[in-house]
Image (cartoon, rainbow, N blue to C red; front, top):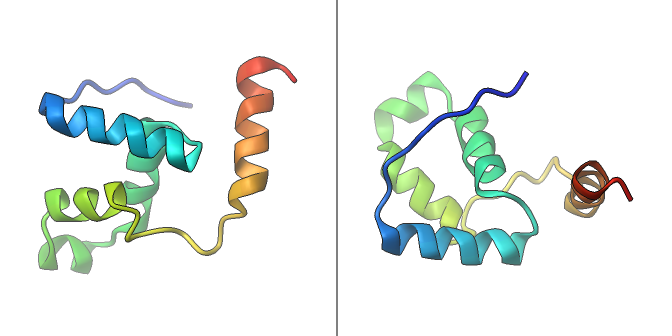
Length: 82
């Protein structure tokens, strides 16, 4: 079950996030969720969340186990009922 979360993020970062989101074909929420799912306790201690999110936004961190085309198609089907 998805739960809403409100974040305070600079306008500059939001604009960049929206651009990257469009380029990647996935929502900002999904990018943040993937990041949070990818970290473990040891990683959290080594690197700040802000640095990780910046790497995601820059496309430096991806999940090689995900078939992005399939995920995008599923999301569009879910969103638009296509």
